[in-house]
Length: 377
Image (tube, rainbow, N blue to C red; front, side):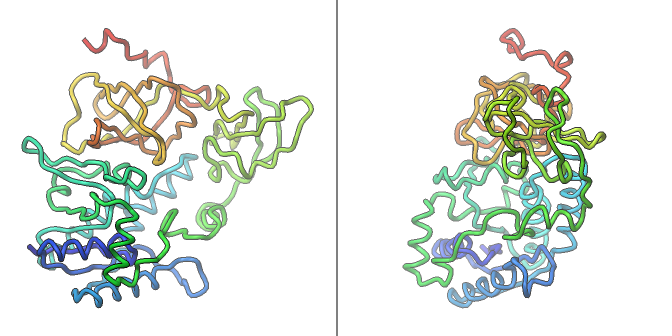
């Protein structure tokens, strides 16, 4: 079987190549360039990553391909990223990049090159159960990436391999070192790929001009000024520059809401203050790995951010909207981020958070009553 491996120039995809070879596959490597920029003095490591990918292919005797997907990335991911920040939301470009670039554009190019399947170095697993493909968590739960892969469907999973999904990270490093791969001690990349190590606010300001405005407490008291509501996210503590005030407690201040139209940023004190907490949310644009959602009102666990522990909840699907009620209050539920659902090891799918029932969350709770036990009958 001919497999086209997405080589990033990192240790994970390098070991994925090695495991595919050991499994008897005919493997070729393809490096995806998703961003174009003069990086001679910048923080982006794309050229070094490409060289590392070439070195891995040379070490393993694999054919190497290089494709520039920057135009597709701009249209399919970055334009959406900017639109969301312009609207005062906090998007997650990795989810869209996986769906639009790595498992659509890359898949199309791999097939044009004669590959039967594609593979990547993601930490996730796939299996076949009762006639359907399932997306499963990686064995290394600390590295599991199903949160970012939840928008994949049956066609993508049928054509995909995740060779290191059953490995622990330390095993990946050891395997690379034992095989003499040049990436065995390379530092893992973090953050959004097109921003790299640079200051996020400075980067975003290149595309979205700052609009300074008032920073207020929920009761309307003016506390200072912000640099532009798009630069802040719910639950954020740093960068507010609010000093101590005798009329308030000494607790830190946190972002609790945005009024984009009025250009006001709302802040409150305390990391678990009531302005940050919610039990219910509404999400849009649901995607389901199996193709269809579970029927009726169903119970499962969910994450509203990548590093969060699983949270018990109930879900009702109404056309293209999701109504979710959590067993315990959730902190800083953020519009634009993904909510992802799980049944044990299986990732069911997810959606984009639109609003919550936090005081500044924008959810019209009268129109979304609690999901009671009677609703489960």
